[in-house]
Length: 612
Ligand code: M6R
Image 1 (tube, rainbow, N blue to C red):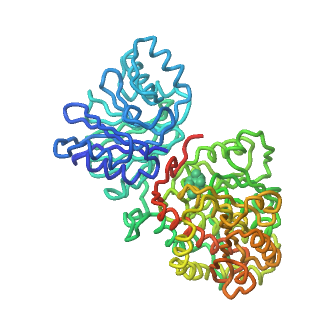
Image 2: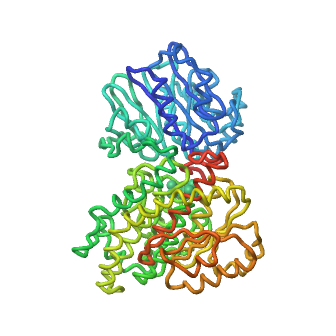
Image 3: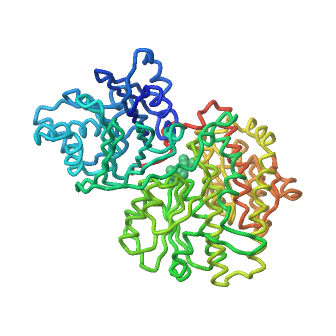
């Protein structure tokens, strides 16, 4: 949560910072602010979005070539102007931006207050910048050394960048638990929470590791040290995505663009990792630990939100195909409930951002207990990717809409490959079936294209139900996690209450909710439980519920019962989530737009949840 950006070089900093903040706004949009040094320290900050910040700045009056910027997802203190970052130290010399939480801020604040410090916000961040100032004063040391000493006293997570009025030719940055990347240009540097504000200017980046800080100088030099004061040298990495990928490319919203990108994203996630005609799967990360993985007693899959839903599909796939027991755990619960984890377990952590704090903490716990950690992440170089022993990137490309879409489908693609690869080695599925599934997987993108072509019809359905106050999503088997995901998509972007349930579970309670005002979305593509679903549809119909059913092309039975049917192409049942999720994403998108909601930046949310 929170996006941070910094610049030092020969260009004007303000436009770079503002553009960077707009790219990072998906991380939080409660307030935005910038600090610049142009002789004086100047701070502009405002509750609301980056556009609101722009209204209080006259760019013609700024000529600074060093600055920092922040877009906030509020943790400590209301989202108002006062709590917006950057925060100044009491002397006015230091300005800080921070992503994370300082857990022991209140005892530090008490101590600083005793020493005469005054606080003008409710944030933990203002406490940190004053702690740094106090260390600098008492130790009579450089800013970077004071940062190092202060951070050794701090408990919590942070990515910070500090601007020092006394040294306008230097930025100091540090991280622990929150991401930070340094872009290296020609005699200029960019710092940001992710590479999106940097890609336009340079492809050369260095990722800071946890417990490291960087001193970045205008003369083109930078150095990295650990908080233990050991010098580090990181290899410069090349960014692989292009600017185009983080722009809307003609779509009105990132979410819609990302829904439409799914066929390509899935192809990218499979490329070079399988061949149906030659009958192989090669997942680099898997091969390295293949013995340990094939002989695992159990898989535990841990994740949050949408990634938790794809984990559930992973459970079905791995148990179904590879016959290895799987448990799926909300990362936030797993880390605190003293779970049994053995050395022979393989823990798969799934995360689009690779920065989700709960998932990272779950990994740490499982690592302590000697389990093998396999990360499935989208963001290259992310904390979860680096904390894992092995793993596979989903290669979905940047996902900017807060509602996860293409990340979900590519996570499923990867976990399908994992399940299939283990299954074929263990001999738990016949080779002929293995080949059939691979062929179908190769063909799945064209079926998703066909499903996307139903957009106009789905928009019409959305117009009918846009004012509903509740929705139920029901599915069985592989479509049950899809029902959960469909409900999550609707509630997070349209603010309509929605619940996903296993279709048969409806009769144990939710059926009481059904009346003529309740839209019920059925996912009814399963061949294996078709008759059972038909019965569930009938139960809803008998209670006058409004039925929207996603069915296979040519379905007749449910057509006769449903108010609306969405006919999708048939596929292998185990791959059906890749298709059935698409109409649900589109339905949520259109309903949210018709209700006037901001689909890319829904209220109270942030793309990457780097706090507990
Ligand atoms: O980056 P991650 O996949 O770890 O994020 C997990 C959740 O925060 C995320 O999926 C969230 O639920 C999305 N807003 C869902 O659309």
